[in-house]
Structure formats: structure tokens, C-alpha cells
Amino acid sequence: MYLEKLSLTDFRSYAQVDLTLEPGVTVLVGYNGIGKTNLMEAIGYLATLSSHRVSSDAPLLRFGTERALIRAKLVRGGQSTVLELEINGSRANRGRINRSNPVRARDILGICQTVLFAPEDLALVKGDPSNRRRFLDELLVSLMPRHSATRTDYDRVLKQRNALLKSGRSGKFTAGHEATLDVWDQHMARAGAELLYARLELVERIRPHLKAAYAQLTDGSKEADAIYRSTLQGILDDDGAGAGYAAEPAAVERVEDLRALSVEELTQRYVQAFAASRRKELERGISLVGPHRDDVELILGEAPAKGYASHGETWSMCLSLRLASYYVMLDDARTGGSAPILILDDVFAELDVQRRRKLAAIVSGAEQVLVTAAVDADIPDELAGRRVKVVPGGIDESESR
Ligand SMILES: Nc1ncnc2c1ncn2[C@@H]1O[C@H](COP(=O)(O)OP(=O)(O)OP(=O)(O)O)[C@@H](O)[C@H]1O
Image: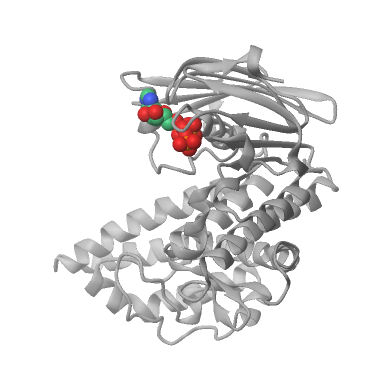
């Protein structure tokens, strides 16, 4: 697919901007802070309903405004779709597809497909597990939009269960609470099992592409891999509640064993793990087991990438993860999905010449590639294409070619 038109109203620094694009490579060039990333962020937001830079919507609204509008015309196999998304400061965001009646924002998920590379991607390796969970879940929802509801259900139950556990912590836990917790356990086990099952499958789809992309970007002396780590294995993440907890007993030892289980069987494992960890959860006032505390371990050669990889290796790993998600989406495109728009925001300035050229050669054949750079010189020759000049408040058509 490719993006033919993008219009933003009151989005970030733009009161109004209109951009016309073509398939193939487009490089958006402009000074630091001029608004290049703002344009890319808007396209990414249409695809994922989240920003790669901020976790809340407020910074996306132009200062002093209450509502931002992203409008895009997408073309896929000769058919165009007009997508509109209203981001509201004080009420739920709304979408519109082909000027229909407004729909929930999440109903537009899956229509605009993007893979966005950005300097923030370093957090995929260096950051806490929430970055890697988000990477997986965003890709999952792009490929299978129904999983947006799976995530929402899970998050809702988790919130309610945590509130109940907190009341247990304050010593006000009654037999009635215990019975309610049993009910929440069942709901959370089911929603968690669906999410876990989908994530495990997705990691298996990503792995061969990750290995291949890392080999393509580097001299191939080390192999890249990704291994899902589930709290069902007695493994914890260390965000929030601190280390030191493991599900007792570890319900499943190896990720291979987890993958062999059905959603129903995973549901049972969660129910058992919740029961085994209830005392600790009541002490801590928080849910300790579930996909909200899982991780994906990224491996380079023999060692985990986090804490061991060099800066260059870390970058190659992050780029390879994004390329892997691109290839997974391309696999789907062959069976009815659509090839995603590739967005490379500010990444070339971060890479050495070798890696720039290799990355450029890999992405240059995509249906549409949007690249931003402060200086033209950072863009390798492999990405010769249209140049769009970004100037204060908009696009300078006369300087674009
Ligand atoms: N909500 C907002 N309202 C108004 N202006 C904003 C808002 N959010 C960000 N900005 C402005 O947008 C500009 C940043 O734009 P952007 O990040 O797109 O720059 P860029 O061209 O990608 O820069 P660089 O090359 O440095 O990465 C800043 O000047 C910032 O003050």
C-alpha cells in the first residue's frame, strides 16, 4: 500500500498541512525541529493508535487546541481508502472510513499498515520489557486487528484485579473479595491465554526473519535470536514491582512446552499459577503473573543483547527487529494482507556508512518508503528518490522535486 495524501489539522506543530506523496522513495528534508517527525508520527498513529514518542495523546494536540485531525488517502491494489482520525483532548477518539459515520478509533486498526524505524527503537534492546511487549502487540494488532479487543479485555480485567488485590493488601480482604478474585482469575486467565498464544506464534514467525535481517545488515559473524519469556515459566520482569518473584511452582519450564499448549490449556496453567501465587499477590497488592509481565529476550551470539551488545550491534538488532516485522507483514500481504509503508525517521544520521548503505539497499524496493533527514548528505545513494522540503509550518513545493 502507499499513502497518497496526508492532511493534518492542529496536530503537533501544524495548524494545517497537506502533503501529496507517491509510491517509491520520498525523502523529507528540513532543519532540526522543523516538523518532519511530526508528519511521520501522524502516519504511525493512524496505523497503531499510538505515538512512537509519547505515551499519552495530549502532546499530539497543537498547543492550546482541543482536537487534532489526521486525514489520509491510502491506495492498495488500485483501491483507495480515506481514513480520518480525530484525536480529542477530553473525549474518546473517533475514526471515519471513506467518509462514513464515525466509528470507534480502534475500528480503523489494520487499514493503514506501517513499519516505523526511529531512534527511539534503541529502547527495544536497552529498555524495560514493556518496550518489547509493545512491539509485539502492535505488530499483532496490525496483522490481526481483532487482537486489539484481546488486549483491551486483558487490560481491563488486570486493572480491576489489581484494585481488588490492593484492597487485600490494606487488610480489608474478605471472603466476598476472595470469591470475586476467583472470578477475575478466570477472566484474566482466558484473556491472558489468548494473548500469550498469539504472542508465542508471532515470535516464531519473527525469528527466521530476525536472523536473516541481522545477517544482511552485519558481517554475519553473530546470530540474532528472540526468545519469549513468560511468567508461567517462573520468570519475571523487573519493571514496577522489583525482582525476586517467580511463579510457584513454575507451571511450565521451557518455551517449547508453552508453544505446544492450546489456548484452553494455557488458560488452565494461568488459573493454577494465579492460585499458587495468590498469597504473594495479596502481600504485594499487584498481579504478578500474566502476559503484562512477560518479556522477549533478544540474543546475539551466545549472550543477551541487553547489557552485552555494543552500540552498533544494538542498532543492528533494533533495525533487524523492525525489518523482521516488515517481512512478517509482507508474508501476510501474499495471502491478502497489504505491504506496509516503511517509515525511516531520522535513522540514517545514527548509522555508520556501511550500515546506512545496507539498510538503504534492503528497503529501497518497498512499495513506499518515507525517509526523514536534517541533511541530504545522510541519505545513501541507494535511496535516490523524490525530495520534499519541509519548512516552518508546512511543505515548500517549489523546493521539492
Ligand atoms: N503539541 C505541540 N504543539 C505545538 N508545537 C509542537 C507540539 N509538539 C511539538 N511541537 C514542536 O514541533 C517541533 C518538533 O518537530 P519534529 O520533532 O517533527 O522535528 P524534526 O523536524 O523531526 O526535528 P529533528 O530533525 O530535530 O528530529 C518542535 O519545534 C516542537 O516545539
